[in-house]
Image 1 (spheres, rainbow, N blue to C red):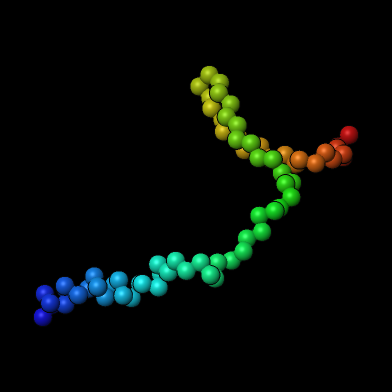
Image 2: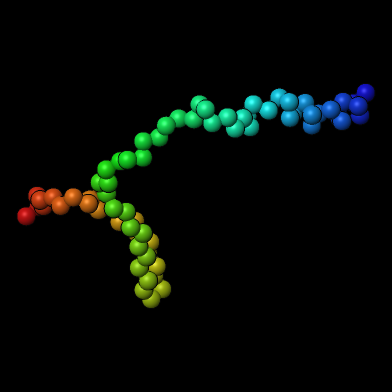
Length: 69
């Protein structure tokens, strides 16, 4: 009996998970990709003798007054 059931397990799995592979695009959400750019992100790697540092530099795009001076 277990050998006969073993043959049907893949088919049962396909039938159970059929809805997970639904490719109907009618209910796809609308993404608003027009976002104002506020930051600039750079990946930077400093190479020196026996020393490598990886940096992620984040800068604002808009010019702003420096409050430290």
